[in-house]
Image (tube, rainbow, N blue to C red; front, side):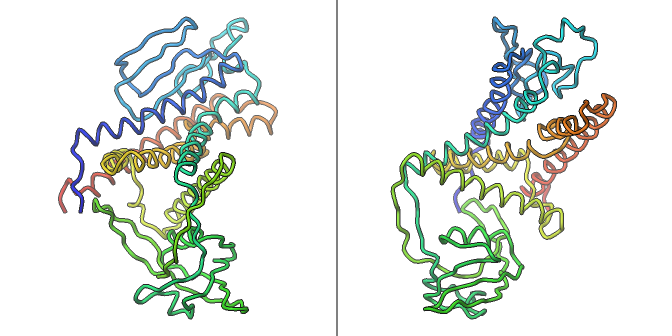
Length: 368
């Protein structure tokens, strides 16, 4: 087992991950807002007390705050960082404010933050694809692990897996994507053996994997091994297309994981928060810059995805209100918005508290 990184390295790595991702996210909001002529009063990296700041010629206060767990852009006309409208403004004062922008512009400004995070991940993955090429592994079984569920179900060496649960399999990575998140489930696998198409019900085994730092994850296995991997160079267009597919696959696995936690198929203890992200950041940095940059892309996808959830105070909550406004042809009442944002804030804070305690328990800081 590799020795864990020091506290200082872990903190530095955490800031290297979260700081740029927060800046990228908020820049998405800011730049699209500026494009539509909406003034920004504050651009903040972090929350709470200001540690550093300056005001530019447009009147925007650029600041770094004490709590580095996010950030915000407060546009003109916003009463607070949650974009609650300031109802004290006159008609003349509303010009150039967020509330004065058409509904579609407000929606694009809000959507820009998460989308920028997703585009950053696509750019990182595309860069890796250009540098390292595309790994192609034919989904043909080359060997079995001892006690492999797939072998017990009747599959044989040489069989080519065509689909899992009705989803087509193009390469061996597709098999992993449809097996790893589902320990304990029984799936239907269709395989080609010579000229025959055969169907096998396979119960996915549950296994706890440990990485070189001792981190544990419960995954599914069917015990099949692939043959030789072929590396194929790709051009810029294919690199971006492949990167987009990789992002979609990761988002799909995230949705699956959340669904399993809600349904009770996975333990809520598998949720992680800032402390666990900091821990993983330090560990990935010790493995080298390629692994660290790949991890940054994963966290960027997480940040974009979470912000799109329809929870008030998050970007997705604002978009839900705009969708309701588009249907109703008028904004949701301010009182309803205020209560929704208060409820959403309470939920987010409670979740942050829970995952932080969960992180501390998983690190065994309190003993058994």
